[in-house]
Length: 293
Image 1 (cartoon, rainbow, N blue to C red):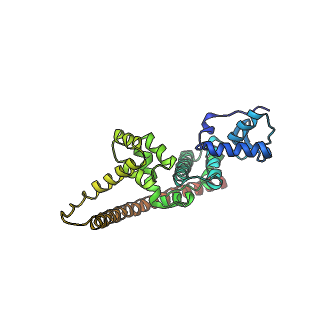
Image 2 (cartoon, helix red, strand yellow):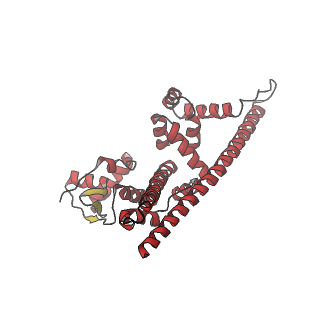
Image 3 (cartoon, one colour):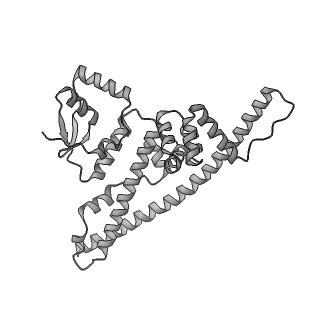
């Protein structure tokens, strides 16, 4: 049978590490390919690593068709849900996937509202015929992740971590993103380092874990108004205790600011979501009235 491998789908989810790939290969060589590859027509959706290993070693495999897919967006959402639920992903990877899901579902919901609104303009001129079945289905069934809390729940991380991941996606250099994925730097520290210029981020990554930690510390201290002057006469232990107290105060102020931002964002997104739902409900009521007349 013909199986088509799309590069778009092959790289949609972060690849296995070399160690994970080797473990999968040993398992397949020992026990065979136990899980069927998932196809959409002839397009390979799930099982790219298994397919590659089986092809390399001439091993048999089974396939199964997913007939529920109607578009590439359906495929992407299915892949995200599958990997969120079954792979051992880092917090950063889960957060990125959940944010992708939020973007896709929000776009689909908005597209459904737009389609219903455009069709509503055709009342009296075959109104019902102008509304696509896909638009109605999307409006009725899609549940967008409209808040950071929803994203956090889907990814099993905190809302604060979602905020930090969004900042990394927006501002981090590719080298810094790779460092987060590799576990060289924490999400919290990477979000701080991403405030630096591109060249400074790259230099910090090149300096290794210790330099990244120092860069994150400098950013936090800069945002909190600078490091307090050390007493000229003091023991090393007292100086260290003072530094920890200052860092704790800075972290507290940072958390309070992030909390205020989150609360404001939640209120805005809640209002937007309610408005969209009200608009969909109104348009669906109009559709029902026209179909009955």
